[in-house]
Image 1 (cartoon, one colour):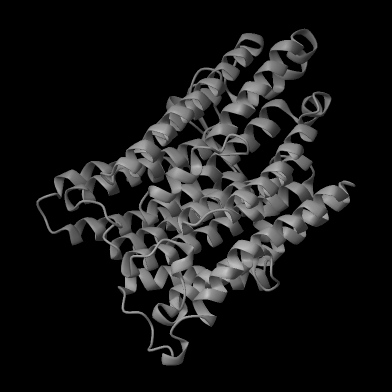
Image 2 (cartoon, rainbow, N blue to C red; image 1 turned 30 degrees about the vertical axis):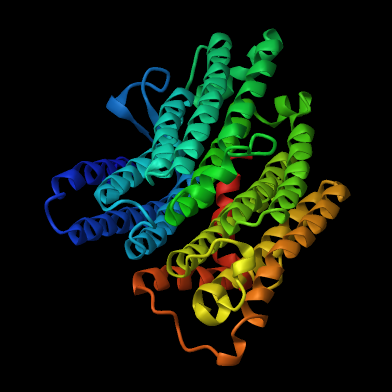
Length: 492
């Protein structure tokens, strides 16, 4: 029965997406309850898989019992179960929030369609993480691109359509680039199954080095566009800033991370460290990461719209993750995985707390945040906790991330990247601290805090939980570190 759970998880998402239109004539509350129980059931199933894999061991699921080189294969290991569990858990919190803000400006007629798209999006994310086949991953990527584009454009505004068009055009370039890389690998190995490609690639490298080198380049660029790695990030700020706040949280905290996880699978499970080092890929990746960490922060510093600032901040934070991947060491990859989780929590907290402020106070400009800490204290407290984590202040999960990345860079003799991490942290402080100062030290402070803001509890609860998790994992990182170590061990 355990072996069937990954498939059941994905089927539950599809069934939910199919059932929502049938409930359109019922009270929308029924749809919301159904969606929550779907996510809850998949979360429980994912936790069971997480415990099973980390105690018993990994396993494969082959559709129709076909051999690996013929059929579709899922690999359920410590890597896949860790991130599917994290993603569905975080999605539950974002989903709860979205039930309270009426999906932030979406027309009432589109509510059901929004949640249909959300469940199809989750289906594709689980597919990308589970699959052990490169072409199968491409199919799920296309589904993810289309659903991501749709949840951006679902608000019927010109800027949303423009952002969605830019998103889908650039992401299709990324998809075609990735697909061309798969074709080159298939030409020289005869397989698209990740395990079989890895077993064949050393011989292919000796005979067809140009094909392998070209495939590496196309696949990294293709995934880099989708993951908004600098300098392929130009679609991200508009997409994240104009989307509904719950969609912004999903895009920034989850979707771009899924593509980074796919990049990890491609680099470590397809090509292997030896070939990548011969091609100097680690050095190229780390240089890109360094520029992303600095330039993303500079771009964020220049923004006046708070959601665009958060979008550019994501570009910088993606640079941290890419740095950990580029080091290609055990500690570096562990730090990258920890930052995927920590940034997911922090960025979700930032977008959701800002979303509550935008929805109830109708302000988006950074210079309008004077006294906001007294108007919406809980939202601003959680925003401040997450912002301090992004800066890297101790007792937050962000501090652990940056410390681990610094230690990883030091262990590899890359002192320059320690300097870049520090400089990027200072730049983060330059655009986060003024908002917190304006919110709590300016404006109607003489009136005092009247109490917790009167917004729906389904919005307050997820925001509060995210703020608590940022602190708890900052104080007790070992709660998840062994799971991360197990995930890294499946790749190195």
